Length: 305
Image (cartoon, one colour):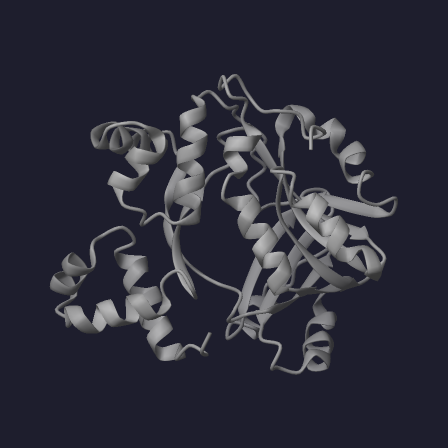
């Protein structure tokens, strides 16, 4: 795969921020740009470096988000990583090194199964720690919903998560429903605030490393200091904050560590490995469908996998 021209990729990102689901012809007409140029860029990058994905409010459907750090011997990284990506409650996992060496998974845990997290993680490592993560700024809202929809909605959420620009006709065929029914289902997810919107997502071909740090206190000046970087902030209730900076392996790793370690108490380096990307992508294709019971009565146990 050839390296992307960043100006072209950034152009597509801005286009899909404004028109995430519109047809290319409608976008070209609305923006007054050449359709064939847009189509060329779309064919060049979409599905390879950029996709549009549904943004879900998992809190509404009763899921809590956790970040875990597991010590795993280097010769077992891929074996344990593979087993973890068979569990749909593991949203994402990648290799890491730092205050722990091994794997760093993101977990989506049903609110009523929080007491099973230790048993779940102990299946993969006997040395781990984990933190609940909330959006920044944290408003202290501790009200979680539950799954109340049919299993078809879980399948639909998987489709929109992988590619929200999937044609309605194709989704209807997948679900065995009519186009109007699919549109109704999508609108229902939006009206229930389960779908918050649709966003262009850059693949990790662009940013294949990150520095992740945990800190007890947040100096908000750090957000201004590193505003030229890809940076995200999360809240760890009762513990502090988590900050993550994304960058390319072509950049100097030592410099990143020295820069960011001044602002955090613990630090790890994430490696977005191509093999793990394939395993994560495969897991993500059917995650919600495997989490939810076939009769739609709630979630399966996080220990089932």
